[in-house]
Amino acid sequence: MGAVMIEVDALRREFGDTLAVDDVSFNVEEGAVFALVGPNGAGKTTLMRMLAALLEPSLGTARISGFDIRERPREVHSLLGFLPDFYGLYEDIPVYEYLRFFYLAYRLPGGLASRRIEEVLAQVGLLEHAGKDIETLSRGMRQKLGFARALLHDPKLLLLDEPAAGLDPGARQEMQALLAGLALKGKTIMVSSHILAELEDYCTHVAMLDRGRLIFAGSLAEARRRLPAGRRLRIRVASGIETALSMLETMEGVSHLERRSTDAVFDFAGDDTATAGMLKALVGAGIPVIFFGEVAGTIQDSYVALMKDSR
Ligand SMILES: Nc1ncnc2c1ncn2[C@@H]1O[C@H](COP(=O)(O)OP(=O)(O)OP(=O)(O)O)[C@@H](O)[C@H]1O
Ligand SMILES: [Mg+2]
Image 1 (cartoon, helix red, strand yellow):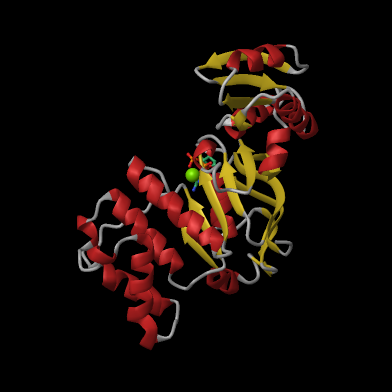
Image 2 (cartoon, protein in one colour):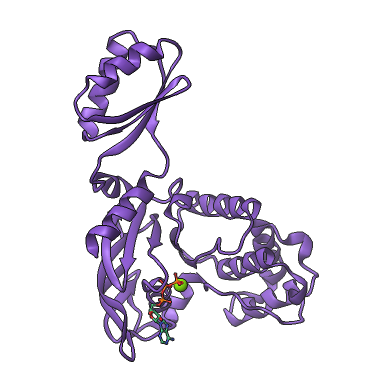
């Protein structure tokens, strides 16, 4: 990390009287997996279409790997792959031919077409459907085809607008695994969603939009620190849960303490140092701690809290 992949610079977009994106500025580092979250109408799609150099800003600009989206749209198109929010494909051409069309439109080396198309089809799990007509594909398969298309030219940056929308739980998991794999390969990924909890496991950064305004942009750790009520922790012990509970009860910053089988679950108002101190105190008192961690969904909590603050 370090180098900046996306620089959003006072970007603004109006549609008539609607201010869809309101002077938004933030940076995305190379290699980051950046979640873009916000309620319906927050401006996520508008922001992504501008970043993909597909929609003109009203004011401000953005740079992708240093290329200005207004002045250098061609370079921007070649650097990124975009998966639009609604992938309406009803063509009666086979999957393979569809990708071949875009492969050639990208002016990629023709001799390598079949190899590359098979590669991306395998990557998204569509290889066995290569010969099917697009109109016969399910929604999940079409989403995968959109993904394959975005990957064809092996872009450094992927902009994915709600890639999991309309997918069943199994397909969502496949999509997550695909994203995690691309992140491991060093791709920079910006992915939008209503549901931050789904992205929490593999995103590194988050930007929160509400009614066009940027409420927060930063690392997940920074987002967690913005949690007004501290964090919710879960501790599991091999034995002696009662002793652990009575110790926790007396600790500063602990509230809403509950016992769940061999686990203690509670809110903790302390910072990282205090949290580490708590674990040390428990282990030091001879309590056999086998798990100590945050309860999932805390980023979602901080998102909800930040949204409330902004209104
Ligand atoms: N082409 C357009 N013409 C007019 N208004 C538009 C257009 N596109 C978006 N808007 C408006 O801009 C605002 C932001 O819309 P946008 O689609 O960017 O939100 P979003 O965060 O992607 O929402 P969702 O979660 O529903 O996808 C909304 O008020 C929307 O009605
Ligand atoms: Mg949208």
